[in-house]
Length: 113
Image (tube, rainbow, N blue to C red):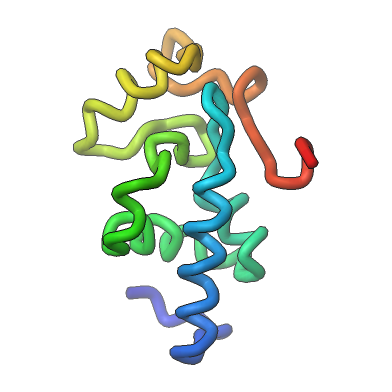
């Protein structure tokens, strides 16, 4: 794992995990957000990769709409072929290059309060 200059304490890591899971739970059907947006909203903008690890290794994430999290370019997770199908069932459009149409479907936590 990358050695971040702003390493988390164990307490901060627990709070980060809770924040990540809370944010993912709020992503509306038919919308997507990015690992980086989630990391920033959780207070650790340089920790986008840690968001992915949190979603992959937290048992609580199984009950959340993790399929609604993509990278900044709108690419789905490598090795998770069902992600695209799940998004398409919700009406998420994909561009010709296979990426989510981020202009139409990007959700940021502060935009829908």
